[in-house]
Each structure stands twice: as C-alpha cells, then as structure tokens.
Image (cartoon, rainbow, N blue to C red; front, side):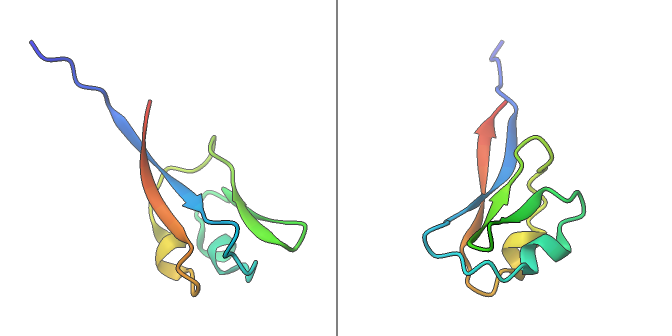
Length: 70
C-alpha cells in the first residue's frame, strides 16, 4: 500500500516586490497576514490555510499559494 503525504497550502509573499498596500490583510479570514513595518506583508504560517483570497486580491500579484509537506 502506498503512503501518501498530505500536503497543505500556504501563502507565500515575494517581499522584494510587495508594496505593503494591505489589500491581502483586509481579505484574510484568519488574520494570518500582517504588514510588517510598513514595508511588506508577512504571513503567519501557523494561521494560514492557503485559501487563496490574498493572492486573488493582491494588485501587485506578489502572493502565491504553495503546497508544503505537513
């Protein structure tokens, strides 16, 4: 029997291109995104479930949803 590794999804912010507009923070249902020092968005990986709302809302398209091994 094959063992499957369950993968979880998480948001990843390309901080070098983030403009810290706060759009992602406003739509996150779990408050998993904070604007750090007014410079870029930072994702709390313990809260993020990878729903993708932040990535869809980001006007700079710098957030992607990635699969991570659990």
